[in-house]
Length: 215
Image (cartoon, rainbow, N blue to C red; front, side, top):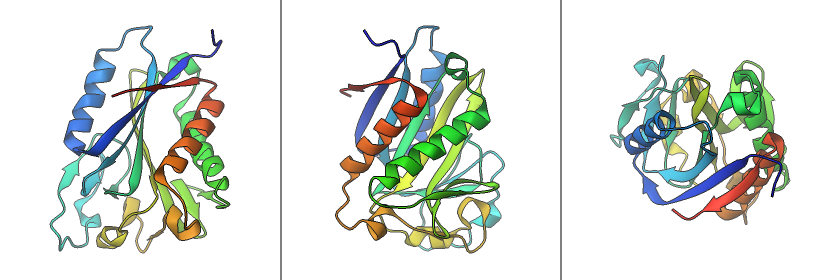
């Protein structure tokens, strides 16, 4: 038996509705018991712009394709989700892991950096701007909601997607912020390879045993 707590990995097939995810995460944390295992949900969303709690609509510059805009309860400003971008929702009990919010953010960012390094991508942080960057372009966005010591929401990694909708917004509230994706730096990348790399890095840093669960 592992001495480490378990992290249940759930991979959701197809494209998951954003509003449905919001409600599912809230419900999961509301129903948690003291012995409920933490979970990592891995999925992709249909095209959607999401605004954080304090997100300003002024950061939506244009919307020629009429992509839905949904107000979220996560931190941060506006971002875009769409097919080819991996979403990692982390449902974690911070007290169980003796983590502060800042430590959790640092852990997530380090996991993304380590995962991308496996594809020879040198990624880095930018002071005061959560997320992960390659050169001066953002490759991974992060937004969390902590309530009663329980985390929901998580982070995204652009893998192989249409980046055009990012030009319709000020990504994460920053004017002229460029975005990039794994495919631009590693041509033969697969989403499965990125998922595995993230699971390995995150479970190692959190000191948990990752357990795949059939959805």
